[in-house]
Length: 600
Image 1 (tube, rainbow, N blue to C red):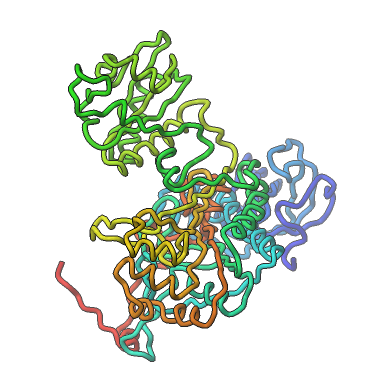
Image 2: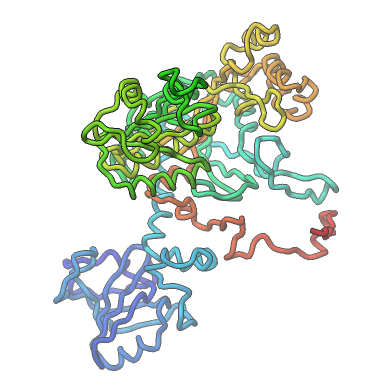
């Protein structure tokens, strides 16, 4: 406080008459006359009005560019025209001395500070230090700090020890591309930045640490999207020894709801226990494994009603609409529907853009007649459709058809799009958590056509070694084996995946043998973990909710870049620091690397 007696958000009417010294940025200067002007002085804590009433002081301020940092010494007095919208709105400061601390040397700024969010994103990222001066942008970073502090405090209260794990490590096949770092002392060899501390935290369990956590940086060379930043992200990484799925659920169901209720845009958050939905049920009922339970719409399989190979005249369940000829048909029934044809067409167009598949529709009007959309195909079978689907007047039916996976995906987008747009079907102002459980351990790979791990290869198969041996003997279909794996979802956003870990080398080897990888392959790919487990590992389980996604939800932002202090753009470039960039030949030589240009 050497350069100021108060902050710009601190003075109140009770301070009238005091001699004060404020420091901050000159946000705005409004001239009213030759000897009257008003300055807005801004710092981290708020703004204070400075009133100029002399020609000399007017001359002083006119010589200072906006966004310069200045020190103002003067007297506090009551404002004649009060501003009730800001905490300091009842007072103003009459300056006696002004000192320029850091001059802004540009007359024009890249964008207006208080409207920076309206600027082009490229300009915002290049001049991020100016963007962060916008109180609206800065508040997201303050929120991020508060949430991380609350998470740390709560995890410590639950008996977890914060331990940092290495940043330079070995490359590991964890589902995304690694960021590689050349090793100067080991020509031809590379470190990798960790995609997650997965192996290290499991090794901590083997080491005898009982409850571990950290706010862990993770690095993945993957493309950006709305809820994922390229390059790096942070997660609340945690692991528990001698623990089951229930132990992990109990901790997070106690830690997260109070934080969401306190810091979130909405003050309601679902409490324990969170709803649990098996993966296959989620795909059938919601069309996604990331359901937004604020929406009351669900999906119904109506294949038996709308698809059959028999001719129309010969069977009440006959095929009557060509796009429903193959695959499955899913329906989303929306009651109390009173929107226009234009509304429906726009929503269906949005569904097609998001899912890549067409949505079909018809309505039951207030008289009980089938109208609109594909009604001419449905009307001949009106009684059957209405009875089997339980349709009432003023109901909209939106359908998806095709191969099962595509139909599920499209129906999920229908639920999300219409649920958010149709009044009365979404209780938006709350946070609703759920667990997605019972994931399949294996699947048939789209490219290989062979058995592959569906999600995390280190998850414990439900049934342990016995179920794997049964599958090996042909008594059990490998596709029916479930894993002790779980996802945490909030408002349609996946916050994290977690699992009960496969801590037994014998079970681990057998699980990998199912996908044509033997013991030597496991030893080669994961030597530390395999060897450690051979020395007696405790059963352990964990999870790692994404901090960036949590803060994005709490702030009510649609883009994750809005809650990251210095984000990269969609092409994984830091425009402010000009990264990635070229390095000198000498640097490359020290690293035993040569850059070779290739023809496109």
